[in-house]
Image 1 (tube, rainbow, N blue to C red):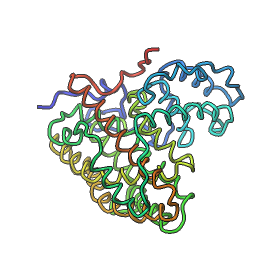
Image 2: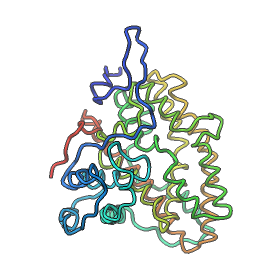
Image 3: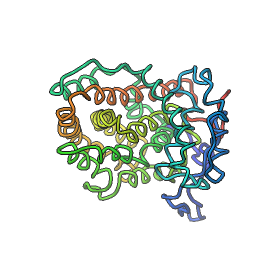
Image 4: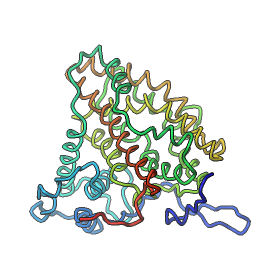
Length: 374
């Protein structure tokens, strides 16, 4: 039996005022930029203090926390302070934050900070995910399939959500995924200018469904907001940024890293191909699980649309996009496979975090405003 769950108490925010007749009236525009989150350590404390001021130059000599190597001795993928700082730097390329001047987006000083944080992320990814062995371009599709099929086993999070999760746990899962799904296809779209020929045609075709060109006629992020509202969650952009842990942010940061750097173009394509390959089956399970918990057709439509469309996207991503890309750029086969391996490994690490917390009877989310231990 599902546990009683008070979304407003658990997550600390409401999306509406509920009138006496029980009808919820939404009071927040979905496109509004979120506020800066609470700090999680010395780096975010320093960074946020800068960002709320007008753009200004500052030298790295004034940032000893960033230049001190021992600060990054731990596992970077799980470092709350580092991942949140990098996420905030990247978010300035998406929608930004209320009270943060848009000119910070291309501030040379902030880009210097971001470069250091990105180097730490890349080091963390390299430690966790070995670069794949060399393959020939014509082997790329098969190599991608083998990566997915032989990915290191981890907890079956999709299976748990399908058959065992209670309502509170499903809501937590959706809160985690809101960090990605309310952006949805945006980071992968950055690859389009760097492509030509069939890959350039294939990627927009895949993205079209994400942006409302498919049967749903609504963007995937809009459909996900319906799912969130059906679960009593705040569907405003960035609502759960304070609540999600480092590994959730690392998933988003890796996609932004690949998307914002042309040198990672191959990795971005491989990342998308892996995502599309595992998405169809997983989303069917999510839809079944939500239906088991009482979710109606509207709440499940996001997952149903993903399951339908991504089964088609899988072939286009592997053949027309990645296959044709490495035919044109044969030295970048390894980049494509590495991006796919990153997507699969981070998904496993996320599942391990969530399931380990649930097995202990704990929330997989952070306490609102909790600072990381220094």
